[in-house]
Amino acid sequence: MIKFLDLQKINLQYQTEFTDAFERVLKSGWFIMGKELDVFENEFASYCGTEYCIGVANGLDALILILEGYKELGIMQDGDEVIVPSNTYIASILAISRAGLKPILCEPNIDTYLLDANLIEPLITERTKAIMPVHLYGQLCDMNAINSIAKKHSLKVIEDSAQSHGAVYINGKKSGNLGDASGFSFYPGKNLGALGDAGAVTTNDAELANVLKALRNYGSHKKYHNLYKGINSRLDEIQAALLSIKLKYLDAETILRKQAADFYLSNIVNSKITLPLITAKEAHVFHVFTVRVAERQHFQQYLLDNGIETNIHYPIPPHEQPAYKEINTQNFPISELIHKEIISLPLSPIIPEKDLAYIVGVINNY
Ligand SMILES: *Cc1c(COP(=O)(O)O)cnc(C)c1O
Image (cartoon, rainbow, N blue to C red; front, side):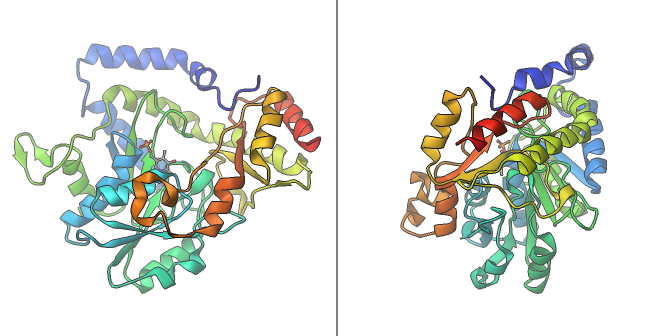
C-alpha cells in the first residue's frame, strides 16, 4: 500500500537531532516561554522576512488571536465582517466566528481553487474590516489584486498560511509577509510540522505583535498584570526546539515536494482527470496535490484497489456544515463542485520516484 502521508518516516529522518533537542529541554527544566521559543520565533520571522513572529498553540488560535488583537487595538468590533474563501478548510471560518466577527464567504477560482479576487469587491460593505486569503493546498493567492482591493477600501489582509510555509510570491516575498498579518499552523501533517500542535503569527506590525504577545499569555506582558482578557495559547519549548530543527530542512523538503508534483503534472494524461492550475513555480509548495474527477468515489476506490491511499480536502463545504446552520441554505456552486470532485494524491518529501511512476500508470489507465 502506498500511504497518503508517512509521518513516521518523515520525522524519523531527524531522530538524532530530535533526541538531542529533547534532552536539552528536559535538562533545562524550563518548558514554556523560554529560550527555545525565542530562538524559533526569531528564526521563523527571519525565514518569512517579517519583523515579528509570535508562537501560539495552533493555527486556529493564530488566526483567532490576530482578529482579537485588532479588536483590542480598536480596528475591529464585534459583528464586523471578514471576507474568506468558501472552499477553505473550516478553521479559517471558525477563527472569524470565534473572534466575534462575521465570515462572508467568497467563491474561489475553479482552476486554482484560490479566492477569486474578481468576486471580492461586490461583497464589501460598511462593516467589512478584513480579507482573509487562504493559500489553499500550498499555492499563494493573487496577493497583488487582493492587497490593492484592501488598500482601496482600507481593509486588513490576514493571510491563512497554514498550508503554504515557504511559498514565494512573484515579488520575492514569502507567505507570511504578503499581508498585514499571517497565521501559520505547525500541525504534524503541515509542510513545517511539529510533533503535536503548534502555530504562529507573523507580522510587521509592532503594535499588533505587542498585543499578541500578551493575548496568548492570559493578556499579560508581566506576570500577574493582566492588560487584556487573554487566553492560554503558547508554543511549548519542546515543540519550538523540534520546529527549529525542521525549519532548517524545510526548503530542501519543499524542493522534493515540487519534484513529485512536477512528475504528476507532466505525466498524468487522462481526459477524466483535471490537474490543478499552477500560477507560478515558486508560489506553490504543494502541501497537497489535488486533482478533480467527476466520479470521485469510484476513482478513489479504484486507486485503493490498486494499493494507493488518497485523501479528500475537503468532502463537505463549510456552508453545508451543521456548525453553520445560518448559511446552510446559501449556494456556492463553485465550492460545491470542488468539494464533490476534489481528491488528493500521495505526495511528500520522501515519496520514492517508483511510487510516483506507479501511481501515474494506474491513473492513466483509469
Ligand atoms: C490546518 C489549518 C488551519 C488550522 O491549523 P491547526 O493548527 O490545525 O489549528 C487553519 N487553516 C488552514 C487552511 C489549515 O489547513
